[in-house]
Length: 295
Image (cartoon, rainbow, N blue to C red):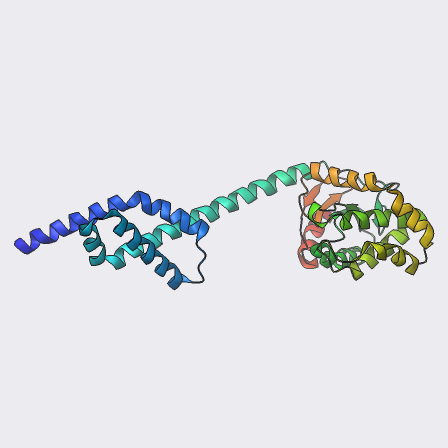
């Protein structure tokens, strides 16, 4: 009977310890998830043991330390489980927030400006049923990767899909991304739509991306490579007359929910249906969207 009574007392003591620890352990779990970087579970368990012992010693409660030592493994398991639950809840909350952002962006994308044959840079059949509208940044590595994919789409669908390029130079890639976008407009002024695309191809081919992919001084020589008058090109670029034109595209994209590049919107030119698919997705994944829109 005495042993049973002692066991009951020990159990009550452990419950009290756990109750006392609940609030600081919750705070501790949040701090662990936000501030402690560990490589694996062994590191995490070691951190837990160290912080737990430190806390108990600070309390100066020798009985609590004894009780914690008697069931250290169980307590550590409970702490680890609590942290895992917290992390899982955070992950689910982030996923739900992302779904909401994607849904809202999709709704905004419906307001995308319709294709203009006089203003837009169109690759492929101007009268195609579907248009891939890309809001892009010449210094974006993902745009560089996506560039040949967009071309492949146009070529594969043989006149059913065209591609419109609109400028979206991201702030952290400026001033180079902005200047490259203006340079393509100068190429267009001097050589027309075909030259615009040749010059755009050349920038993506030469740049190393991320805002310092090539020197600004190389933009005029690149124009000369494709047959443009370097002096006239330089005058155009230095005048800044296309700065506002590039920013119009950027502001337009921002208003319809574009936040990153490549910001891709598929537009059905007859029905007005839109599908937002931002990112450098592979051809096969985008083909599913296009085939569905063409039905």
